[in-house]
Each structure stands twice: as structure tokens, then as C-alpha cells.
Amino acid sequence: MNNGSNSSNTTVDVVLVGAGIMSATLGVMLKQLQPDLTIEIFERLDTVAAESSDAMNNAGTGHSAFCELNYTPQLKDGSIEITKAIKIAEQFEISKEFWAFLVEAGYIDTPQSFISRIPHMSFVWGDDNVDYLKKRRDALVQHHFFKGMEYSEDHAQLKKWVPLVMDGRDEGHHVAATYMGIGTDVNFGSLTRSLINKLQQKPGVTLSLNHDVNDIKRNKDNTWQVKVSDRISGNKRKLNAKFIFVGAGGGALPLLQKSGIPESKGFGGFPVSGQWLVCTNPDVIKKHDAKVYGKASVGSPPMSVPHLDTRMIDGKRSLLFGPYAGFSTRFLKKGSLLDLFTSIKFNNILPLLAVGRDNMALTKYLISQVLQSPADRLKALQEYFPAAKDQDWTLDVAGQRVQIIKKDAQRTGVLEFGTEVVTSADGSISALLGASPGASTSVPIMIDLISRCFKNKAKSPEWQAVFTKMIPSYGQSLVKDEALADATRERTSKVLGLD
Image (cartoon, rainbow, N blue to C red):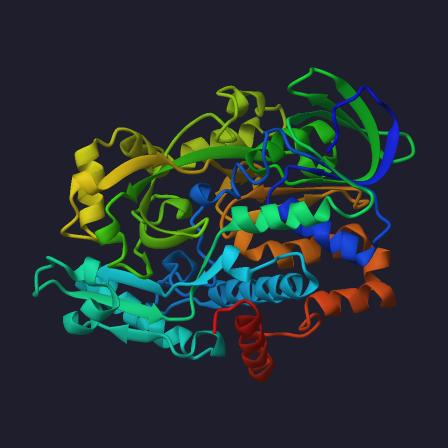
């Protein structure tokens, strides 16, 4: 590990800013593709995966669109749009392919350390919502990714699936649920730590914790000068990089702005914070075995979709409910209250103002969440677990997310809740902005990034062969080829211990 010396003008092939799941995934891929690459990883905190990748800072759901209702909107004609759900399901299958390769290649000692089989469920109540959920299930099962999805409105069946959710519920309450037994829970913090631990053992790879990347400037030869400071010793350092990836969660936007690339103009960030209710009663925890997702409140961001979740965190079974959304001007959980204000630039002030004007419902929602009392939070929990008792739960802070604000066609601004990769025209710098589905789709996101930033090498027979080794379905469509999708899912389930 680097000790933060005052050395300067070292040149490395790759600088990764942020030691989270995205940087870990990209670093491992690049090292597989070209083993002689030199890589420097800088993390501002004293440990790996302590921000968005940490288990308590994200949903831990292997986002495969089995249970997330925001991926399947109902159109004006009453039909259900499933295109996004199919895309996300394929992306997660690709991620599992890569993780299975990592197990076989020795990057991960035991898959149980980061991935577990936990059923995925959607649960709704009220005639309109029940009608929507039935239509959603009927639409999804037409595609092979979702075959086997069960649906029920029968209270007796639902009690078998989720006894806590049905315990104390009125027999006349019109409810419905879908059930997918092949859902997963993923500890992205544990996965990230495994990858970076093995990665830094490779020749030419250096991890520097407690290091801030203060500035990024382009050199005359189109490489990048990176200014870094040691948060402990205060030592400063400069180095040159041929390629930079900024995967610093909410901290990515300020560094992207400092790069000065034209592609960064007009981007802004809207921070959303979160909190969990964490169950402390072992008897309650062992009675629930599912990830149960509901419908988001009108105007709420996707990261605040309510869910009652069984989680496996560092080998321990847990039960969480939430997240309760909130607002903070910090871009990172351990960031500065000035983050939002320092991100305001001349080129993004109009998009920021437009988003503020057009999203009053979201603003009111977040304010209402901030002002919630313990009684309010318990009431929200009891919609999913009617018999919940306040003394069995404690409040914990969840992650900080920065949603994307960017110019729209009218050059004003639009707020987006997805994940976006911003890359310079020459492919020498790239940054990841946004949140959900994020970590679950890290593998296809990084494959796309490599294809864009290392265009010539990515097309070479040597790199193509490595892509196929890491992702056996590479270059083929799991969406269109049902037999390939089935065989892929069967193989990865076996390797990852999910069968």
C-alpha cells in the first residue's frame, strides 16, 4: 500500500478514483485483458467499499427486475412496459457470469461470502394496484427471464410465502404478490473487498487509502495529471495517467467537472439520503425469508421504494425495512455539507433551476420524509408488517445517492434516476454518475466502458478472447436466445452456489 510520499510525475496506465464495486470490477477486467497494465487506486476513506458499495448503504438486491415495480411502468392504455425490466434482467445475468468466472479464477474464495439465494417478491394492496400487479406478471412471464414467476391473491398462500407480511392483516384486505424463488441478495461490500484484495496482489497495482484526488488536468500529450493528497500525513503527490476512471459515487461529479471535458458540461447532481429500520429481534428475523418490494409513493425517487428485506450481511442474517428518503447537501455519506453548492457551475445552473421548478412534488416528498417522527416510520413499516413493534427496530443511516441532472433537448434540465457513464471523446477519462440499478449492472457497464475507452484494443482478437473467457455469452443475446439464457443461468447458479 502506498505511504503517500511526495513523489511526482510518475506515469501509470490507469488511475481508478474510488475503491468501490465499479472500480474493482473495471480494475480486475483490465488486468485480465492486459496483465502488464499499471494501475493506481485512490480511496479517500480508510477502508475499501465504505460508501455506496457497503452492505448497509445499498439495497443488496441483485437487481434482476423480478420485484422492482418501477422498472415496469403502466402505460396510458393500461398495458405494462417491460422493455427496461428485460434489459436489467439480462445485465444481472451477465454480472453473474463474471462473478462465476471470478470464483473459478480464484478472485473469490467462497461465493457464499457475497451472494445468497433469497426469494424476490412484489406486494401490493388495493384494487388498482392488484390489477396492475396481475397485468405485470402476465406480461413478464411471456419472456423466458421471468418464467416461473408465481402470482397469488390468496391469503393462505401469501402466509406461506411471507408470514410476517400477513401476520395481523385483515382477511378482507385485497392484496396480491408475485414470487420468484431464484432471487438473490448481494453483499457488494464483501464482493468489492475480495476483488480489490486480490487485485492489489497483482504486479503493477497499488492501492492508496486515505487519499484525496484534489484535481485532474489534461497534459499537452493528452495524458492526465492527477493531484493527490494524503489525508493523514498531508503529503501531496502528482502523477500522470493515460486513462482515468472516476467511480467515486457522489464524489464523481466534482472531479468530472474539474477535468474540463466538454462532455461534463451541464451535468448537475441532486443528493438523496436514506435511512433503514433494522430489526433487533432474532425471533422476528428468522420468520422472514424474502425481499418484498412495494410501490413507491407518488413523487418519490426509486431508491426510496419501500421493501422489507432479508439480508445476509457478513455472514449474519438481518432484516431491514426502508429506506426512508431524505435530503442532504452532502454528495457522499461522509462528505461535506458544501458538496451541492460547490457543484453549481455557470454551465449547469439553468438545468439545476429547471429541475427545482419541475420537481416540486419530489421536493415536498423529501421534506416530509425528513420531518417523519418515529411513529410515522413505524406506521410505514406496519403497512408491510402489521404486527411490527417499535421496540424490535432501530434506525440506521443508509447510503447517500446523487441523482443525475442534465440538459434536455430544450437546454434546460431534467432529473434522471438511472446510471450514466460520461466519457471524453478520446476515451481517456470516464466517470460514472447516478444510482440504481448501479452495482447489480456493474459488469455490463464496465464492458461497455472498456469498449468505448479502449476501442482498438477491445476489438483485437486477444481482448475478444478474454471477454469471452470472462463472459461466456459475450457477443450473444441472452434476451433473444432462450436456450443460451437457461444454460447460462444454470451454470452460474451452480458455480455461485445458488442452485
